Image (cartoon, rainbow, N blue to C red):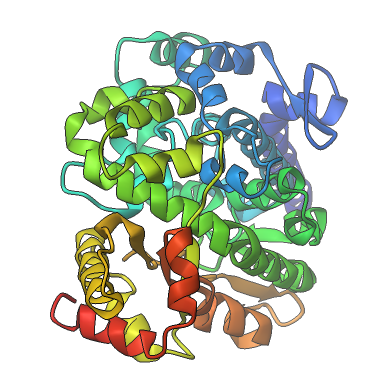
Length: 458
């Protein structure tokens, strides 16, 4: 047999191995589908249904994807359940494309591909209601959401049984992909598909969040072109894109930038988030957190409102969750480029420090105004210590046979994804109770007052 024919047969055999994965087969044929917004046909094989029907997965239908964003964008009431199906669908599309890449198939066999499918479906398994604002506080008592994923995957519930008996997958393997307990080129490649610069998660949430919020920002990049440009990086342990995907990737970077600016870090969304965070900070010691985090959005809101009655947090919680919406107002905002001194003093600080700074500012305002300003009337919102994933991915130029870092060939990526993203989009803001906002708006020297109040605390 001639070498070229032998190579073709090996290639065909490896491709056929992927073709026998039921979910990929149904993606091609259009059988066994479930419809999710927007007009997405998601393969829904019996073994995928077996996972989705477990109590562990069904709880995601009671947890909002965007949490407090719905207080500003009323359509943003989609759930982590819907998002998980979208991420799983994207994982199939990635596998469909990458199965044609010889270097990918050299690392990822059928079993690893099925592990990726399951991990994509379960990637948010450990999330609880309002998970991100709670985790951003980084309180000592706070269990990481990975612990919750382990609780569901390694326990005695229905999900681990389905993984073993229906899929033939050890739940420990799924947890390893999700929480990086061990390391290998194969695992790094799988994880880069789930959580990296161009991953199946971002590809879904930018599109889906934009759709439900009623804004166009996250939908205007060519997802199909981007997927078709996927290749394995030079090291063989992560994703890269070909030069044909450069423009689509640039538009994705811009979409993410605008979604953070106009949706996730919109000033009113951050006002609601700050009110929730301060309330949770003051009240969290009243709860068994592991039990609280096992609840739905509605249950957690109800428990917090009950615990807050008769406390200074009552007004905060009722303003966010009560029948009469009453969000705090911006008194000031600062970014890295226009107010570097204040920004650097407060950005990335522990949440307890921000609370102490806000309390000190309330005391200074009391002295300045000649009347009491309750500590919970002043809130400081600042970027958390952890930063967003840098858009570090290589571009493969086929004619030259070389890989180059994306930021070297794209001024868009260099400017938006590296230099400006966290420092510009995620601003430091001071929020105050509505009745205090007008008074502060007329006050001269507020910046100096803030600097004075926070100097000894921060």
